[in-house]
Amino acid sequence: MKLVLAFLACFFTLTISQPKANKIDAQVQALLKKMTLEEKIGQMTQVDYTAITNHYDDIVTYSLGSILWGGSSEIPDITAKGWAATYDMLQSFSQKTKLKVPLIFGVDAVHGHNNVDGAVIFPHNVALGATRSPQIVERIGGITAAEMRATGIQWDFAPCVAVSRNERWGRTYESFGEDPELVKQLGAAFVKGMQGTDLSNPASALACVKHFLGDGGTTNGKDQGNTEVDEATLRAVHLPGYVEAIKAGAMSMMPSYSSWNGVKMHGNKYLLTDVLKKELGFNGFLVSDWAAIDQLDTNYRSAIEKSVNAGLDMAMIPNGHGQKNSYIDFITMLKDLVKKKKVPMSRIDDAVKRILTVKLSMNLAGNLYANKELLIQVGSPEHRNVAREAVRQSLVLLKNNNILPLSKTGIKIHVAGKWADSIGAQCGGWTIGWQGISGNAISGGTTIMQAIKNTAGKGTKIGYSVDGSGADSSDIGIVVAAEQPYAEMVGDRTDLSLSNDDQAVINTMKAKGIPVVVILLSGRPMIINSSLEKADAFVAAWLPGTEGQGVADVLFGDFNFTGKLPHSWPKNMQQVPINIGDKVYDPLFPYGFGLTYKEQAK
Image (cartoon, rainbow, N blue to C red):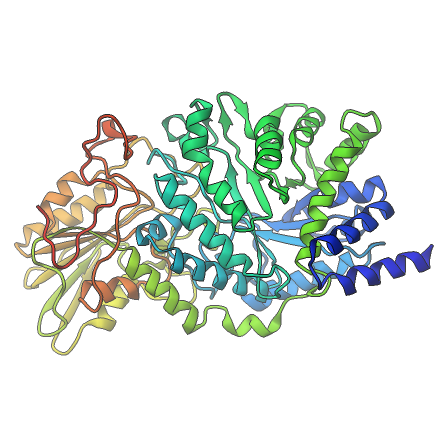
């Protein structure tokens, strides 16, 4: 028996490097025949790092298949080298299991490898939607994959292909926009960039397309809410991104917390199995969102039964020893459900086959540990230059009364606002911490304030104040307004007005009698009417990430504005939601709007 198992482990390692479908299928079938029920269920179990800390032997005991780092599950040393060392340590436990099936590690690298200090942070998806460029998005996907693989992590919970239809939604910035056509183009481009032409490439990573299905269309934009539309609308608006992602080679997807007409997606067999797997031919695997199966039923056993029978292949579980609904509970209860024929063995085998097929296609056994040769690329100048280019392409000029571009020489510029010198505000949520961070506790990159100083030429003086004071003798005033960083749930809003503090700074600068440029950092369109009237130029800069230099590149005219709105811009909250194609459509700025230096605001 030991000889057979040793041969199987060797077979797994040597032949996985040739990811041809027939060979991979043969390998998967061979593994399945050797697996016990417990080992199969282990492959279906994904555990958060914080849940397994101090219990690493459970990787061996339960033959666990996956580990993730949730939004705030960082390790003590969050440098790229620190992440790589932790990854290698954890992966080594997989080689102590009977069959030595590698762990697959997941992370929310939604705009770069954003849990790693020193990594390049790209603009969030809403900004990439403004670029209208599949080419830049594909490059970003490839760079993100390379920086991930430098730390060992092989699986990214991205891209989000939600079609955001209500700016109240706190995840609007994770969507490329309100138009299904735009979303499907850019989502597929990210998948192609991340996965490359060959998933077995040690610099490629597995994309996870999310959140299936309709999370951007919930009533009142409520996160984890209810999408109340008929099936024709669901398919026309919210499905195209997934269809295109499958064509691009997507091999993992994540169901949404949200519901469709009152039915939770994690328990919707019609959409997960009949539509996605059968009708659309999705051959990859489905992983749950964070503890999402818990929402199906107050009885955890029943929740497991409903989700797995609906088509879920892997459960993301944040709870560990001594906690309710832990990964040990999941494994124990699912095993019992199978033995009592509440969950068919065929469903278990299907789930595990899908997971193993992906692992073999990625040649995880052949690329077991972190690719240290890629460490030098993390946050490299080359990667930052791509991010800077993305920032330039994403900026949308909403108003310009012949104020921009700015002169580089011989003028006095006063910059104001507490967000002008904050990389945290530029990056927004999902940056180091789940909800993001304020200030400059992120290594690398350039704030907008520093970028303006870098770009200003001979004889130009740059002043700064938080509140706009001290601008009296200036030639130009620049105010950086922003949303406080936020992520899912916390970011839901019923009022999208600029903060009182930001409006006060704009008013103070305007009272100085000088031209005022407003730069807005936001994850969505805001209510800006009064501030827009006071501004002589107004720029929607979205959440540009670490490379604020890209903003200054365009402000000073080294590059033109090319960004176009990925969302219709409402006049007031009474207009929200407003989307292109509405029967009554009278926005402040229409979808696709964006001035250039050859055009002036009407």
